[in-house]
Amino acid sequence: MHVGDWRPADWSSFFVGCHDVARIDNGLGIPNGERGKAVSVCSGLKAPWTSMWPALRSIS
Image 1 (tube, helix red, strand yellow):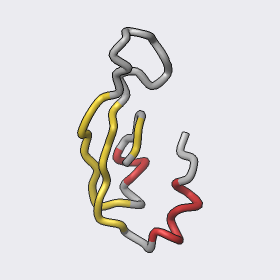
Image 2 (cartoon, helix red, strand yellow):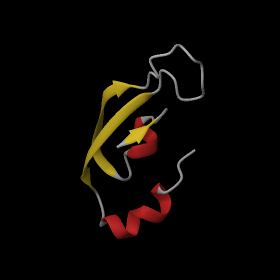
Image 3 (cartoon, helix red, strand yellow):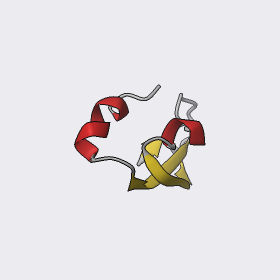
């Protein structure tokens, strides 16, 4: 799962596909950096998780 802006160029080297399943909403109308951002689920690992994790720990 990923939260935020993530274009196909960002994830295509790690996963076969990603799709948005929700949007962040705090339900209170309080603006913050993540409000309205997509929550994505990715599948189809292109390499073992242990080798990809160092590059995926912090994507910004």
